[in-house]
Length: 303
Ligand code: FAD
Ligand code: MG
Image 1 (cartoon, rainbow, N blue to C red):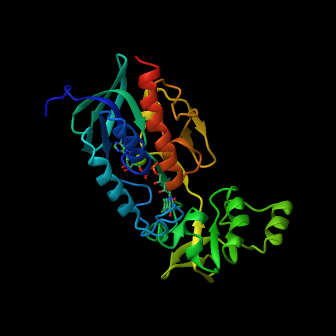
Image 2 (cartoon, rainbow, N blue to C red):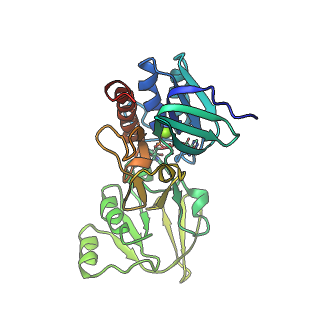
């Protein structure tokens, strides 16, 4: 397919999930021409229910996105491009975005909403349970794990934070799994919160929810398991564009100012990509700010 440089947009939004849709909605409602490029791999696609998002608590996460996309596409200035943005670069006073199938889009502003990818601990049985009985966020899935016992599978010393929080949701067991050994102070803090520590290595996870099969042959039956994943940005686009990054507790994220503009003027970033730890509600809020920020920058800071 020949490259199409005739498509000029006020803004191109890369990533059409919660953050990207929210950004695009503000731009569309300001009658701006906006294109959304989306590869359709939401971070929470393994989960059957999304929790903690006001007005949508417990709804299927894909249904929230599908309804939002339908509402967005009702605006006449919106184009939806299914697929991957493969490259993005500064071009003149704006940007050029190249899609995986060779299309080229030109825009004045760029909004990155591409999210992050979770790197799961490599334990047999864990990946199949991800988003169902294994999760990373107590606020999202802790309540559904019932009274417990809820497990915390250590992935680094940061899992102390998880372990100290979870007793609010249910009886908690911390599986240190040779990742770290709580020191005296940490052990005392865990004891004060009533957390039991299991130091045997986890060999496998099985069962309906999460039966933790340990190296010494015992099995600890859980109502659910929490583990803090490492996260990485879903695409290298922010780095390619030269956006400043920051180190978060689970991985790098894109630094932004109050209007969600990055260190590269004209490039905005929102959602999980642009904060240390995210959620649907925060992605929607950040997206709204990025969309309004990108819009106003075209008025008050013309190219
Ligand atoms: P995402 O939803 O991850 O969307 C990013 C989009 O960008 C995707 O569609 C992706 O395909 C697209 N994309 C990436 N790269 C490109 C590219 N190069 N070109 C085109 N498109 C691209 N949060 C809650 O609030 N409640 C919950 O109950 C909850 N449950 C969760 C369960 C699980 C298992 C996980 C892992 C997360 C959960 N979260 C939950 C967190 C929530 O999923 C994220 O905070 C939210 O999805 C962030 O939205 P986003 O728009 O920033 O990114
Ligand atoms: Mg998005």
